[in-house]
Amino acid sequence: DLAVEVIRRNMGFFVGGYLVHQCLERGDVLAYQDGMCTMLKRLVSITAALNRRYYSAAEPRWLDYEIGLMKVKPENLTCEGIRWMLDNPGEKSEAMLYGLLDKVLTLIGEQFPELEDKIAGRRKRMAELAVEPCESRPAIP
Image (tube, rainbow, N blue to C red; front, side, top):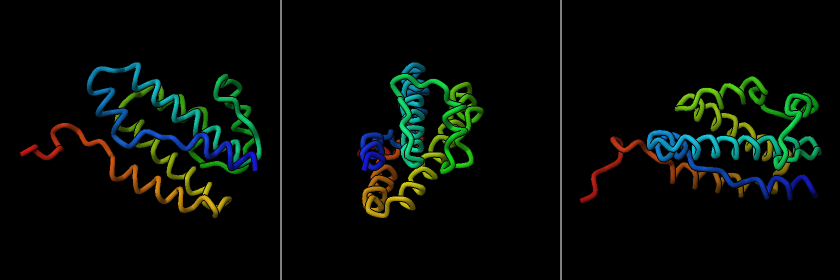
């Protein structure tokens, strides 16, 4: 199934905290924006696949039109929400992004039960590897 292949190819995501703590807090604004755009394009591509549509993340245009055609999507997948996340770098944007990711993963599991183990593994691994702010990290003995 083409939809499953598109989903598999777009399942690479940064762990929570990476964008804010390893990019933004270190002054790597370009890395932050690139990571945010990469994840957003992957989430849009996956959501399009859930609707049996193909969205070219290589040329991400006509986003409002494409999202409007998608019947299966998280309610917070909107052009306004994407624009807000890109215009407001920081913890709130990252939280919005990962909330969107969680909803997209849930939709994948609902449509493709055969991917549920992969999704559960991905969620577990991302939780294990979440990046904490420097002041929250345990001291190295």
